[in-house]
Amino acid sequence: MNSEQLAEKLVTWIRDKVLAAGCKGVVVGMSGGLDSSVLAVLCQRAFSQNTLGVIMPCHSPSEDKAHAQAVASKFSIPTIEVVLDDTYSALLEALPDYKEGSTISHIAQANLKVRLRMLTLYYIANQQGYMVAGASNRSEISVGYFTKYGDGGVDIMPLGNLVKAQVRELAGFLGIPQPIIDKPPSAGLWEGQTDEGELGFSYAELDRYLLTGEVPAKVKEKIESMIATSAHKRSLPPIPSF
Image (cartoon, rainbow, N blue to C red; front, side, top):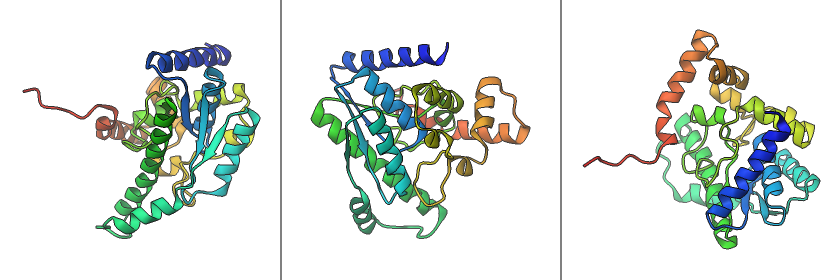
């Protein structure tokens, strides 16, 4: 399947899922990254009059907002901006910090940002009668590289069967601005943060593992460990069988 065929199938799939749920459009968070940019364009093709992009800076790099706005402008995607800086800071003031300054605390605070964005998207979606579309791809989902009830808390994941390289190829076909395609993948959760730096391996290696299983032994071991330990993130909460 070439990129044009894939885009058409995804647009149809998005439209069918939203209408089947009795909704009339789509809300998508626009982070200025590759995945969310591709998703926003696909959603706009599916619902040209009923797609809303939401830009949600939360102590975020200014480049992220600029890239999101560039995509919105190029593809005529209506957007609103909800600045979460003060909300995030107020929550940190109210919440206890049991391990101040630790790696655990750092990750917990980063996850809080992502979950605030989820709350924002659902509030807006509920107001509009829209569904929330998430930008996670197969590579991220497979190893649990997403926040449970954060960017994983969505109604549909149109890119969920595409590895990162396939999303990048689709971005080229759709005409996503080249600086967005070329920049290192990052959730923008703290200064200098990159996806591959956190994962400990490259997306190319992860994609290769998912598609062929052929990666160095140490990389394979780490990927398979992450797949196993993140299984709970890909399932509904377990309930007793009795």
